[in-house]
Image (cartoon, rainbow, N blue to C red; front, side):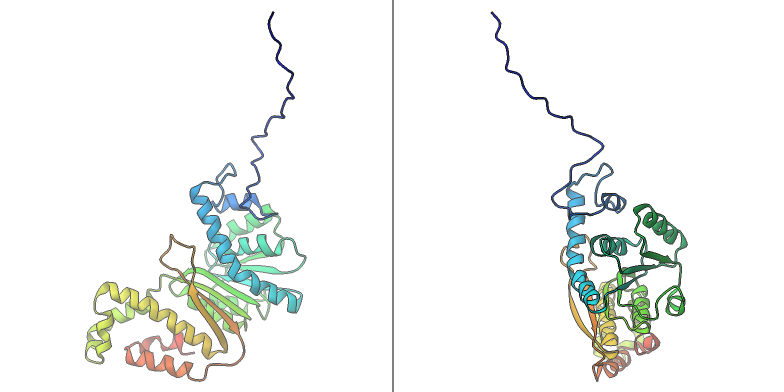
Length: 291
């Protein structure tokens, strides 16, 4: 006589259209946004590469979140401008993680490429991120545009290439920003001037040996650019923290500058800028850094 198998309770079939909520994601995070930013795969999953990207996002966020919380606690509101925003990667992440669940706070993405501005506007509408604004403006236009508040609380520039970081600094100074957060990228301008004036510099200072070889010109120019930017911010009453942005292993541009406005300028900062530009034969950059 054949044995009968005990009855089993049928399990409900999994819905392949609804990916499991990953424990790595923070509660309430927009899966659609993470897919758009290629942090999640198209089917809403995490692979090795996307896990690394997610870790990088959270690492950067942990530097900025306390600044946003401080402003919000003091003012009851918050304005953030992401300058040279590109696809507004950083602005979307900050809105999603910090502002989405709140009733106040506005993120402005400032970018000169109209097609990227239009793309960001469409994505914000699709995600119902109602307090995000995207503006097709140059740095000069952004400092006087009626579409932006007279003062901005936080200015960010993530991997804004070459002089775009300097544009963000000029904007922050004009808007008297409380905090400035910079991850500089591709600092080519100073290196190009060092290279152009290299022969003349050999007769002026033995320090020219520091940038005699092309690879040293590039590396020294990059470091010098950020040092001048720090002095410029200090000359305008900012206190700085400069650190390594650990976690962005895929990028050699790994420096994070966080500036807090105190209203107390460093007394010799402008003098130091003048001396550096003079001694390194970079006087043609005076209008960019010594202002």
